[in-house]
Length: 160
Image 1: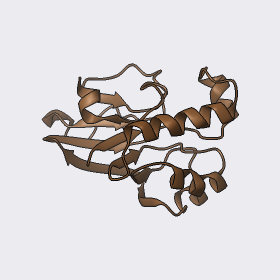
Image 2 (image 1 turned 90 degrees about the horizontal axis):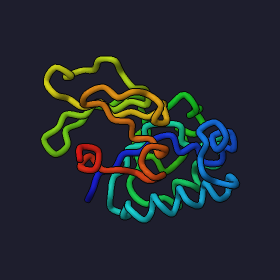
Image 3 (image 1 turned 45 degrees about the vertical axis):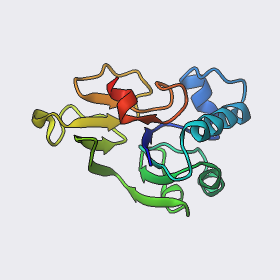
C-alpha cells in the first residue's frame, strides 16, 4: 500500500483550463487525462489524500470516485461544497489533518501556511490551492496536479 497526495483536480471545470493554462482542448480531454494518470499510479489498495477542489459540479463526484483507484480522503478546498464532501466514496472528509508517514510529520490542508504545527521540528506542510504559483517555503510542498504532471504524488517524490 502506497500513500499518495493530490489537489486541485477541478474535474469538469472549463474555467480551470483557461485560468491555469492547462494544456487541454476540452473538459472531456482534461478529465480523461486526470483519471488515466491517477489510475496509472494509484492501485486499488493505495491511499490518496485529496487536498481539495475536486470537481466543479457536486453531482459529478460520486461517479468520479467510483472510477478512481484507491481509498480516498478529502480535505475540503474553497471549491468543495457540502454536496461534494457528502458524496459516497470518501473514506473521510475534513479540513485539516496531521499524520506520520515514513518518519515525517505531515500537516495537510488545502491552503498553504506561513507557519504550521511542528514546523520548528521539521514537520512538512502539504497543500494545494496555489496551482504552483506560490513561492515555496522550506519543507512546504504544493501537491496540486498542475505541479505534478496531472497525477497524484508520493512523499518520496516530493522529497526527491
